[in-house]
Image 1 (cartoon, rainbow, N blue to C red):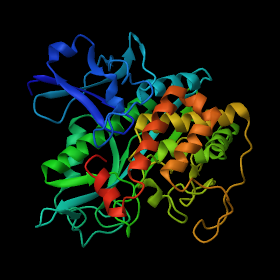
Image 2 (cartoon, one colour):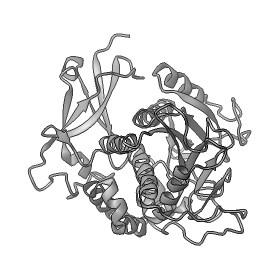
Image 3 (cartoon, one colour):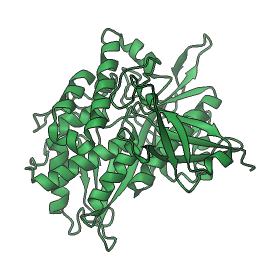
Image 4 (cartoon, rainbow, N blue to C red):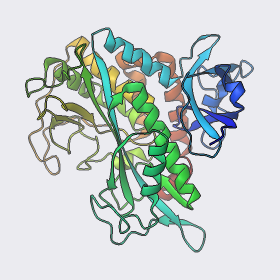
Length: 423
């Protein structure tokens, strides 16, 4: 395939893929300019005075410093280039990819390299005769379903084939709990690479669906009477010998226990990052297999933090609160920082959940009940704020408070329709 353009992309705080097509020779210069105010534009295109964006300072530039390696694209003639955002040669505080790099470096100073595996869940909608979108018609679908009864349009086949051609490593794909709902699981990799793959898979999948006249949405609860869709962040750490340190002796290590303690200590404020839209709080309810309760247990899908320790090689921690409204780099940055705070500060780890998680739970703490309350919790958590980066938190809190206010009186259907084209 002849390459005649480079698609330079970055992920903003709304989890939108901002970018430009540029001539390949322009990309060879190593950077592409954008207005910082890209981070200040709401879903409905209002320009907001978001901290750090320079809206009242002449709307200045930022540079996307492109990676040396280009990635295979899925559009004819277009390669993909990702990068980190800089201002005047220095990392930009609103760049979640750059923030994740700094978090990885902090773990590496401890002799540990984070390994990340991301699971994405999504629904498909199709166009009805009257032009509106309705849930994908899959009457023969079932949990862990595969093949035409689960996906009559062959959307998942097309996504898998194109992802494979683009070097995006999918580990598994299957029908999820409800009709028209799917799970797409990526292979474990180094943190930034894993998030790059998740970001690109999401863009690729939605664009292939659009070409088929379908909408693939990662919205957390697009159909009130059906289950929710999450983004599960799985992680482990490799030591300097490449060994997994989560459960080397078949039980959680002291380090892994500290990580669990950090995630639960910052449970409420993490919602402001991981459950980042109004619709998120329709998914985060008791008995939802999401991330409502402040609890953990081994091999227990009704908890927020699920541990897997049966195999020392594949042992991992799984955080189940996030959904498709969150920037994947920011989600992993937040999970790894909360875990690091637990290790560094020696937080007490609650006892493991030993009840069913449906009708009976040991936990008492839970996520806030709305996006506004979650943004407030994040704003007030000084330790997590400092760990994530004050400017990054200020910007996210500003954007999400504005979003919550815009949709304060919207109906469930109006909220869904507001987000559906974007998420």
